[in-house]
Image (cartoon, rainbow, N blue to C red; front, side, top):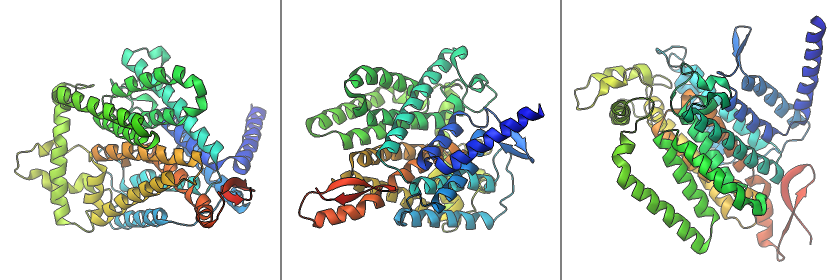
Amino acid sequence: MNGLILTAVFVGAIWCAVFVLRAPLLLAAMAAVIIGAGFGYPFMTFTVASTHWTLDRVLLPLLIAAFLVQRQQGVTAPKPWGWSEWLLAAFLAWLSVSLLAHDFRATFADTATPVWRWFTAYAIPILLYTIARQSSYGRREINWIHGGLALFGVYLAVTGICEILHWWWLVFPKHIADPTVGLHFGRARGPMVTAVSYGLYLGTSFLCLWMVRERLGKLRWLVLPPLVALEVTALYYSYTRSCWMGAGLGTLLVLGLSLRGRTRIVALTSLVLGASVLLAAKMDSIVALRREQTAQVAESSAEARLSFAYVSWEMFKDSPVWGVGFGQFPTAKMPYLADRVDLPLADLRMLVHHNTFLSLLTETGIVGLGLFVALLAAWGRHAWRLHRDALAPPWARRQAVLFLGVLGLYVCQLMFHELSYSTIDNCLVFVLAGATTGIGPAWSTAAASARAAEPEPVFAPTAGYTGYRLVPR
């Protein structure tokens, strides 16, 4: 037995060394995100030195080590800071000050501690953003990410539909079938065991189907229609309104930026008219959507957001600049629930916030919310400029279009849910953001030179770097 353990340790050490020295960092970062979403805490956890570990938490230190070693060896592609990075640093600094100025170790009923939220919801995603942005990558890595997310979406769709049909023998991992694990049992919730995260990942994967269409060639007319139908069905069975709206907005953005001429007009007009007719006919059913609970409970959940808006506004008026402190909303809200207004404020007593924007406003003030909104705007502006630049490589423009669609999906989730209680949601978006903003410095210098040059530029890969440079014809 001891010999087997030593052999396993030796083999594991070799593979860790290979990973640290040779792993493509962008793909490794996305792999860590997908593993965290599909095989996270409910799937497997073990304790080492009184610390709980999961597969993604084991991979994270290896990813950090790989980044540091490869950066020392000159394998990465260091890029200068832009507006996005300065805003990201300022946002994290403001969160840290707000956290440390209050009792950051306090626990509030069943909610997480403020320091845990700071670490998992923002520090880890920002770390992955940095690794993704500073890594060396090009067309192959971006195509792998699009294809990998598209395949992951097929798995999520099949799993979600099997959940609704109660075909538990086809569902993997098995913790999905346990009603005591996670939230939203009765909806399609996937291995994340929450319909919100499931909808975010499935919506992103759905957009990736459009990104991989050209690589399928003529097979796309045979493969894509059933996959689109499968994922749309699974997305419906998530029974989560914000996911529906986010996927719709993301689809409009992707199609609007990808299509041209009459095709774009017909596609967008059809989508908008179809959505408008559906909303007009089914508005009452959507508001009182019956999910794993009764229709009355679902309608009460929708109305509770008005109560959250009222309480958030009153808290903001009392502390507009500093807020009540990051992670302090669960206790700071209590005095405001006694106000005599025609709203069910008492229902909020055991609930966490249902809006990330309002949560940041109440906890970190107008400064914290302003920095976060400015960060999202800077990411969107960078992706828009990348998409519009005719000298950018096609794979870079595809990534820009995908990220703009994901950003629309993400904003809808932020408006209806507090995403800082889960690390997998922000990690997905932040890695895609890092992959998008990391492209710009690779071609901006070449683009500026090309505009001043007389002949049309030809782009070719530089040695040891996956950006692009101008070469003679």
